[in-house]
Image (cartoon, rainbow, N blue to C red; front, side, top):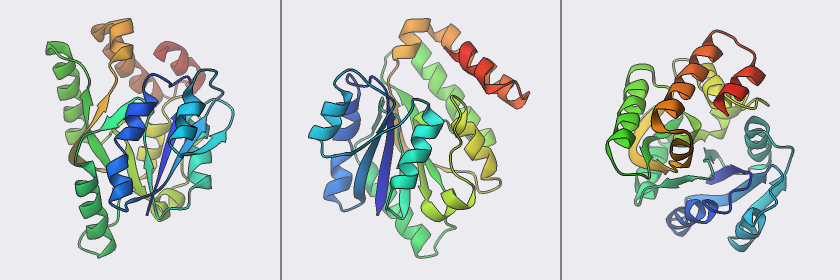
Length: 229
């Protein structure tokens, strides 16, 4: 039913947890396949993926083109795009299964969905970031890729799919969904706070906001990628 697509690059420290969280979906019969699209990792990323029984593709590094390659190879009627440092909260399979059933029976319009954002860190600043993301999603229905994206294959293909962009491929695709922007599920997608630890919470958040602003001002993507770091 679901093809899970995960782009990777040097993801040995996070990938195992991401894949482990998908096991209940396999047991429930929701997940048909997991596709790892690697951008040239030299660490243990591919070994971890192979041990987990995932399908492995190798393409040139670039998240947009990695996601697009995974979607092209996928066989499921639904696609679930996840980052390699994002772990779905326990019980996700129940909500996702119910959501897909409602879409397929016509109880609700067939459209994409994303998870609620969370950081795997304690303290005040992680909660501030989470609240900011919640506000963005509530006001603009604009989830980022680290919240995952569950989307019917028909909808994905009709909107043209992911583009070969080094950054902002998630925002670009959401923009093409138009009024059918993703529903935000209750289940959390818990994402690594490593970038925030490395850069500092204030600087990382400021860069994220600046990159989004530059995208809407049509600044060339290669310059936005430099600012993002």
